[in-house]
Length: 378
Image (tube, rainbow, N blue to C red; front, top):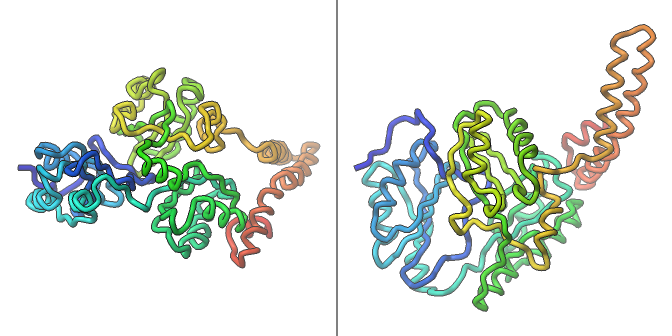
């Protein structure tokens, strides 16, 4: 028997996927009995409880896979509903002190809709106009009032917006057009409507050679170590080996899009370990089911030029020039004949203001006020 612990004193290997939703909206029905159920486990307080939950669920006959999102307290279980039902799994968790409610009973979905897929799924958009987290409420206000949209999630570093929607009510193109019309230039990176049509005809979505693996860094104690890790990965791997990094400091996890044929998750973990990052693999993308989708009309070479790549991303030249001029202006602090360098600060403002002004005017046009507006007026 595994009882819920009273405190969260350690961080064991975690299936925490905070920052990116784990939800796979396609109901996985290989047969009537194969189901994916979703549970809200109120008793989860942190990643140290994950081993206990796994110990309760995984030994159960009929359970194939357990995925846990600590932040949302959601547990996804792939199971054979003919062998073990969602109600039985709930009872097991309740009995061990993890108060649980069933959000989705995969067994009921399977019995009534065997072989079908959910109408609601996730489309991904690269939003070039999203520069920082302060713009998330604006995008939420634009989209959340639209019929057919059920959930939004954001990845600010990659400038990605993930939208759960019903394509029969609102298409990915309509969502992209809505964002673009409001000044957030949006490009569709994954269209669930296309996926839905292909799956209804028996086709599986195309996947690239890249997979997504999740690793936990147990000694990640300060957030500025993110820069050190990014520099390490950039120096060790090319874009053909590692495509993207996504950091989540609260959960101490990093998601890595990589090509397992030439760069395995174990190799990535070893690289980190040899550079004093105590790393363990939570999910090895090569084990199956974690391929990165290739979009309709996209090729592998297209992926290498993806605007969302933060591992090998370029810096705006105007931003670089603004920084350089600002550094030169600091020489004026020496005083005397060097004081003339203070005028370089005007050059710094001249190079930096266009981007800020563009975003500020876009915000003011919506009768709102944000940090960009304050910087412009200052």
